[in-house]
Length: 422
Ligand code: ATP
Image (cartoon, rainbow, N blue to C red):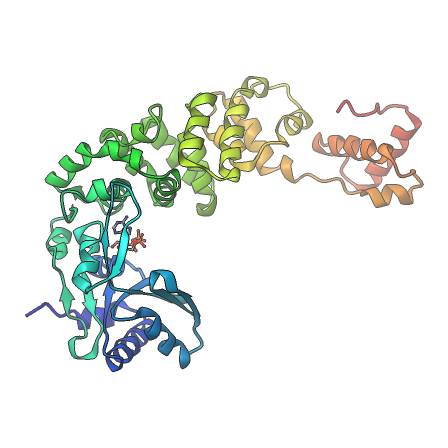
């Protein structure tokens, strides 16, 4: 008799999600299709970790079932006919439905050839035993656990185990996934899995930059990505992404500091810039090319190193706020934040922090329109006056509109205030 987890499922899922899972199971049964909850949510149910991204596998036709479910609800339906998948978006949560499939790999790292299959086929194509469990949602077997690869035992023993010896050869992104789950959950790689992982690290050569980057981005969204990067260095994985990358104590310390200083959503780009901080420009370019980073990330990484090369000029305690502003205003925020964390000069760090916390927000009170109303003719002069005003404001020399107006008139008379130096 398979273990039955219906009561755990009832406790774990929020009532509206549970109700929907039951309706989906019943609807599937009416269409003659068995329906299963699979993957991360089953793992997290056992671990007591919240995860309500429901992945459902249908032995039959996922799209047809999704269409039936959409009929009597407010859900928004998205269908991918090519992949036999559908997504239903309900207010506050979503259901992913996939037709059970089998996969075969024509060569290492190739995208798999996919055919409709059974639940068993669908489970063996998965990455690790703990992600290859399913719970039946069909009414007569509601809550029955299907655990063909002893995922529950591996959860109890806190182990990450691949399902067959060629798993990392078929898809080397699983190497990054293995370390991510191991470190997130505080598990260990099962001994044979670790041996095969070490054997197959060179398989990254078979994987596209986009796929590697996607997994690296997932790592950088973890609560403590430095743990994964440290482990990646230890297992010889990080050097496969670029030989000069290091997941060492320096990186761990800087990631922790980043978490103390900045909000969660701004962390992943910062982590990325810290990761490349000790590369040369040439190495950085090689890494950008290999992982095919999009323009924004590539720019943040390049600016980080350009600013690093300029830090000496910021390590001068005599700089005025306007000098700091002038040095930094053309850099992107992650590049400045990264250097504030990573600079070895406390003075440069302070200047970078001052820019982030305050100087970048400083604006003049008078606008170009105000200057026109003061009878200053449209033309380059307006820009010059505004930048002189901005400089004076940064340095705390003017505080009110009135003081700004006084500065404008004195600038015009060409008396005390010289035209801005740039
Ligand atoms: P989390 O989002 O918490 O990291 P998840 O298990 O939901 O975990 P997804 O990346 O959303 O992870 O993948 C869903 C499921 O698809 C996984 O549980 C796993 O069974 C399977 N899967 C994902 N990527 C792979 C892969 N490269 N090889 C094999 N199976 C995979």
